[in-house]
Every structure is written in structure tokens, then in C-alpha cells.
Amino acid sequence: MANDFSGDANCVALYKFENDWPNDSVLDDTGPVGTNHMDDINTVATEAVLVKEGSQSANFTSANSEGFGRVDADLSAGFPLKSSGGSKVLSICCWMRFKSGAPTADFIAKYRTTDNQRSLKIQYNTTPDAIEIYVGYNSGASFTKSSHLGTIATGIWYHIGLTYDDTGGGDGKGQVKVRIWDDNASAILQSGGNDTFSEDIGQNVSLETNEWMLGCSADRAAPTVELNGYLDEVVIFKDLLITAEDATNEIDKIRAGTYGAAAIEAGKTMGAIARWHMNQRINNS
Image 1 (cartoon, helix red, strand yellow):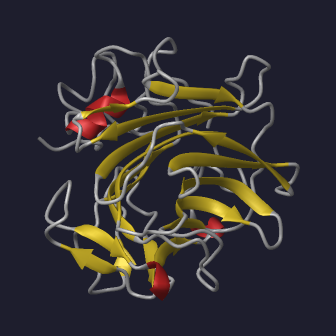
Image 2: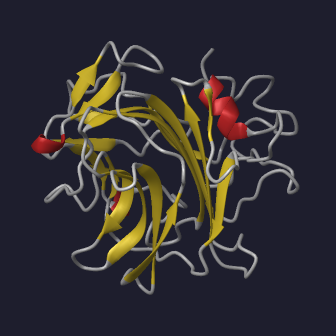
């Protein structure tokens, strides 16, 4: 089955790595908003065999400093972490696979260290082979790091689901949640015995002006911490996906390709004013 995000007004970007890319050097946003296209940086290759959705994925080679980027000013209104009026609540899902010997990589990021433009990044850290979430605060000068404890191997597809709620922690500050599916084992990759990793970070995210990037961090002029691997079906929301440990879990539905079935989901209306009931999903954009 294939996911259907068309009726979800909180889905602000969908990158399926299909359509006209790479012919026109633009990675199309094919989600409901449809305007948050990304520029191809240094010619990311296509991949037709190692694919999780559709007919191709994106094949990144770190030595070539490849990636995709969209500058902050061009992001749609309310886009997560946009410097002016951006949502501080977000969800991100993607399929990713690292090549043998892949180095540490920032594979989804709005994060630049050279001038304290830190907002958020998802990193594969080879020490200790884990997924880590960095959140910038203090006007981007400082950061927190949250580490999912499951071991990541190369040559395996993983589905990564992240939610960030800037007031979701017990102290009213930021909360990070991460859920990872190991496609080789056909099972959730646990973190400390839990299916969903959750951590209160004790800080609030900074909204900075650097680019949103796929496959690297920093910006198009100087990509850094580049990915050596593959991405497929990257989707970004300006609200929280349901992470309950039951059949309502929306990260699991996206991974299974069933999101959007049955008039999007039970309790959700179609169209531009689509919203979840407040006891199901949160939106503060």
C-alpha cells in the first residue's frame, strides 16, 4: 500500500525522490502544501534497486558533499523551525540505509555550528552506532543531545520516526521522541527496553535562519557531516504524530504504508482545515 498525505493540512513537506528529479535539479515537495521544493546540491544520485517506496530512492555519497536544501526564507508559513513564525512542534519520518563503512552523518538537519545556527538535526553517530537528536537553544549557541540506545548497522533499511514538542516535557520545555523500525529483523528497534525512546531535554528550541537540509547539515555553500547512504519517503509535519503503543500509532502507519486510509484517519476531517481532536494530536503552529 502507499501512504496518502493529501488530506492532512499539517503535512508540510513530502519528498519521495521521484518525479522530475534529478532532471531539473529540484527535489519536488509532493505533499499537500507542495511548495517546499529543495535544490539538489552536488548532484545526488538516484537508486532504482535499494528502494522502500515508489521506484527510486536518493543515493548519497559523502565524499561528494551531496545533499538537498531549502533556504529559511523560502519555507512555507508555519514550517517547523522557520526563523519567522515557525512551528516548534514537529514530526519527521523517513526510511534510511547506511552504506558499509559509512561515517557519522547528519541526514536531516536545520543546524549549522560555525555561526551558532543550531535548531535541530538527526544524526547517525558511528560511536556508538546510534541515532541521536540534537536540539539547539540559547539563540543556537548551545545544544542538547538525545541518544536512542538501539544499535544501528550498515546495509539495513530503518524507518525513523521523530516527534519534538517544545512544551511537552514534564517541566513545560522540550520533549524528544524517537521510534525506529529495523526492516531486516521486521521489528521495532528498542531503546533501553522501550519501543519508543522519550526524553525531556529541559530547554526550548531556537529558531535560526539556516537552511533545512537532507543528507547533510550546515548549508549548500559548505555541506558538512554528509550522509553515505540512502533516504526514501521523507515526510515532515507541523504537529505531533500519535506515538501511543497501540494500533493508533501513526509512525507505524507511515512505515506500513497505511497512513491516510479510511478518510485519512478515524476522527480526522479532510481539506485545508483538517485537524485532529485535541486528545489525539497537538498543533501549535
